[in-house]
Every structure is written in C-alpha cells, then in structure tokens.
Length: 143
Image (cartoon, rainbow, N blue to C red; front, top):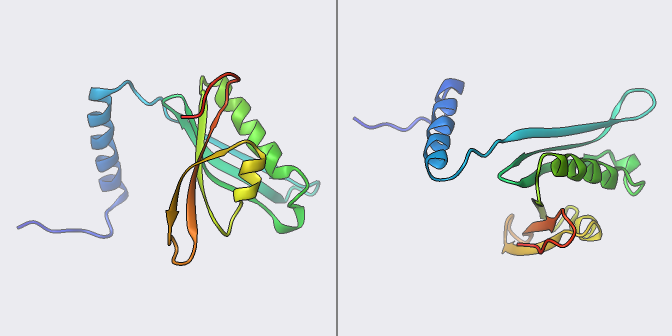
C-alpha cells in the first residue's frame, strides 16, 4: 500500500535530491553547484550581515541577504552583493537571480541593477513576490 511521509529522514531527502540530479544530468550538463555564503562581522566579531546562495549552470542564485537593522543603509548589503557577484564571475557565471517580497528589499536590488523578471501577486496575501535577474558580464542582456 502506498503511503506519504511528511517528515522524511535526511537519508530519504538525499535520495530524492540525487534522483532528480540523475534525471537532470542525463539531459543537461552537471550543474556544478557550489555553495556561496558570505558573512560580515563588526569589530567585536558579531555577525552584522550575510548572504547565502550558490552558483550553478552559469548562474549566481541569492537565496538570502540580511543586514542587521542598525547597519542598514551603510553599504554592507551592497558590499555583500558585489562580493558574491565577483566570486560568481570567477566561477564562470554570467547571470544572477533572486527573489524578494514587496515588504523586503525591492528598491535595494533595483539600485544594484537587478531587473524584475516577473511578479507574483498575493504571496503572502496582500503582498507581492518579485523574481529578479541581472547580467553579471558587461554586454550581456538580461534573460
């Protein structure tokens, strides 16, 4: 009898992930996925910002970018973003993508030359989710 498990083990999650990778790599080249995480500290060693993401198939993906409230609007977010983009270029990436919510940092990403690719309404209800992209190499058009 078939069953569904809403709390799979770590081993089961790895199995599903590998199965999808195997399928994908039979069609396209290996993603060469590498984690790209950066953390910024203050003079006392406290974390004041961070960027979590990775690179794959020639793209930088920014999953999370956070700066402690007292340190916002001081260039830390832009520095984290720029450093991630520079590392992505070293890894052969030509583009970057991310998503942000209407109550988060849309203006910040637009200031850093990210362009809205699509908008999803009511996620969460009454708000919007934006998917943004940026060409990392000069002369490249956004996708």
